[in-house]
Image (cartoon, rainbow, N blue to C red; front, side, top):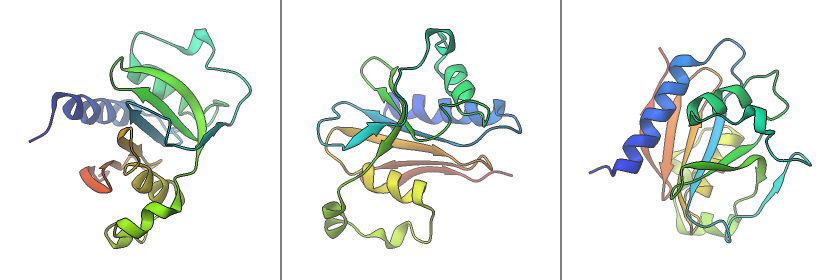
Amino acid sequence: MKTSIEHFIENSLIEICQNAGNDFSGLGIIYYKDLSHLPYISLHDANLPFDLITENLSKTLLTVSKYSSIYHDGFHFINIDTLHITHISQFISPPLESVTNISIDQVIPCGAREMTAFLTSNIEGVFCVGLISANKTIKIFKNSSTIYQQVST
């Protein structure tokens, strides 16, 4: 049975897909409680400018996910306790030691963003990882399992 936060995440990703335009680059979101076990580094020397932050989480994520935005690359982090974006455009590197404990057969063949999301979803402190591809396919990974998938039509 899905939790209310899982429903919120699923509905948010669906809303983003429905409102994404032709310049949508795709999106990767790390929903987390604790980042101390996730290696990451910012792809920018600054935080998200205040003029891009809105009350509507989906609107902010849509804005930064346009090809025209300098913040469209990398993963964005959302704290699941506050539901606020805490980090934008992060390069993440899940430890490959985790591969020995899980089967990657369920996710391959796939691209680098999808494999990164899959592996990251198994890291302590990460609640789940949501992806939307440029062609608007949604996937949510939790504990190295796909808990939601919607293929674009």
